[in-house]
Image 1 (tube, rainbow over the protein chains, first blue to last red):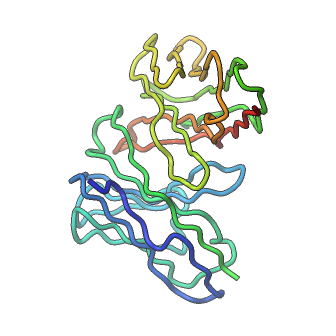
Image 2: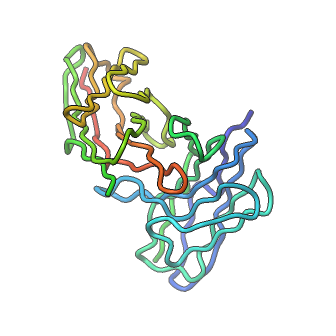
Length: 115
Length: 113
C-alpha cells in the first residue's frame, strides 16, 4: 500500500493563479480531509468528506473548493491564490468518520508559496 | 467548545534526559485522545492513543495516560534520543456530526547529543 499520497511536494504561485493539490489513498477509507499547517497554529481543518459525493466545510474553508468523485481521490482547489494561503497542506484519511478512536493517516504534505 | 492546549516549545533536552510534554483538553463527554509525531519534512504519524479514562497509550518508549479528572494527556519518555527530535501534536476526536480531530499547536522537541 502506498497509503496517502500528495502531489506536488512544493509549488510556487503568483497571486490570483489557481491550482489543484492532489490527494489519493489506496486504503479504501471513507473519510478524507485537508488541513493547513501554519506556525503557532497547529493544523486547521479546511474541508472534509465522509464518502464519495459528500463534502463539507471545516473551520477555514474560504478560498478553497473540494470534490470527491471517487473513494480514492480528494483534490483541493485554490480558486484565486492569495499570500495568506502560503502554508503547508496535509491530506489525511481514516476508515470511517463514525468511530472516535480511528487512527488518521497523513500524506507527506504540499508546501505552497504564494507571491 | 472542544479544544486542545499544549505546552509551548521548543523543548531542548540532552540525550537520555526525561521528557514531559503537557497536554490538556476541553471537551464534552468522552473524547479519544492521541499523540501524533511529525519528523522533519514528513507528514504526521500516530504515536499513541487512548480511548477511555485511565487508559495508557504507549509506543517506542513514549507513554501517556488519559486523566479525566484533570482533563490531561501528558506525553512522557524516560530517556530521549537524538532521533526523537520532531514536532509532537496532541489531538482529540469528538463527535459533532462526524468525529473530527482537533489538534493542539504542536511542541517542537530538539534532543542534543
